[in-house]
Image 1 (tube, rainbow, N blue to C red):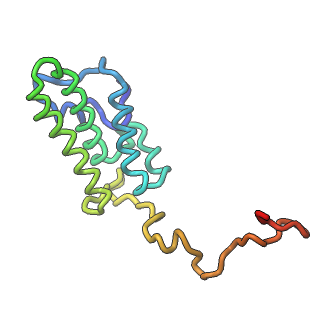
Image 2: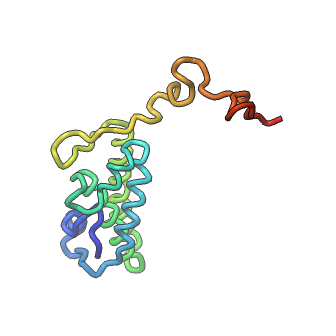
Length: 158
């Protein structure tokens, strides 16, 4: 198993002692967790920060914990899906819901992700103020339809 965001101990911390994950588990669980976490946090952290989370050693503890819950949830659901459907719904879904709740709290600013250096990770401010993203700061457009491209050629539709 490739450890991308979470180590085996990060995952097993959320599983019952009699249902521990081992190295022979499909890598797709790690990839699914990575995709979900990046997709949820892409508007909060820069791409550089998100891509730096390429191993458990490079991933903040809170993100490792979220990934551990997501992977444990899917692993447990797959393991018991044919045997005990009611137990799967109660345990696997609660792990998944915990992970999504933490992601939601990060996105809303209720939880701050702390980096490996112990300092809060810088958040991407693109989109924080939609007035600045959509309008020029000076009030004058930078480009217009009649602006000259080079010499006498004008950009225009007509």
